[in-house]
Length: 351
Image 1 (tube, rainbow, N blue to C red):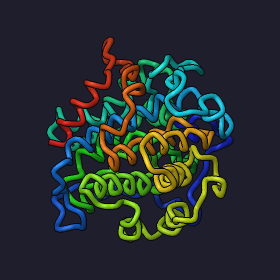
Image 2: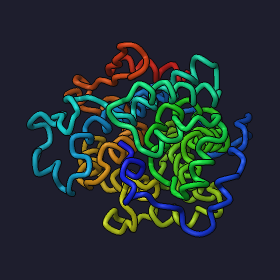
Image 3: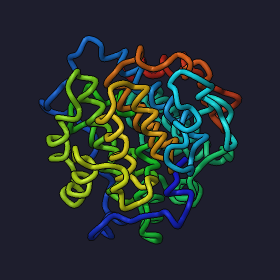
């Protein structure tokens, strides 16, 4: 769930002058990029790409029952790893059921494949079809953008112009599939793609930049590099108006307790995911740490799961978490994707 979108008291706005974002043109069109650090050459790119998508979906489903709960709730209920039904369900979710985070990521991925590349109007139409089917979970901001009757290239900007609040994590949460698809095209192309897809529903550039950073961190990991040591280079490619804010939450000494906003906002959500990756030694430990932060647990864990999947690969994701995983797609018949279907989607996106 996109907490910052769903609960108005937690909505945040980017620091400093951001009003220009309301009328700014969409981020630059994706073009072939020149040489960039960490271009994809690792022989295990596809398995780790699968783990990025699957890992994000697992994190989403694992965290959903603990959403808006206190910190430490997951480890209090499951103090020993591998003991108990950790994919427990609750809060309206069945065990292993993924939320809007993964549902929207699937829609992005399928559009990229069926259109043969990035067709923003098509992604927006898929989002609208999904929203019209009344999914269990959809952020208030995202719902307004998708149902306000405005065209795809103006709906989010007009929402931001009126509300001045659009820095939620609702674009970041769905970025695993697009990150995998654009990873082989270099830093500039993957970051630009992240921005453009984010701008479909979020008019604040802060949300664009957070999604772009996630894309690049995944790209570095899939190339076999260390995404944490590459963060300074990644930050250098962030829009200057937002670089300092992201540098703060991505710093090695930052802790989620230092967040100045609820983690439904894009900055602490991404910062918390990177913190969980940095302070643990396995996919499973990273996910447990992410859910234990509390708050917007499904999205923080989805972002963490995508990053940790890219780093550790598919064998690191516990089978007991993938077996019950399922992703309903409201508005698209009775389709429900399991782990095998998600893995197949990821393989095609990485091809």
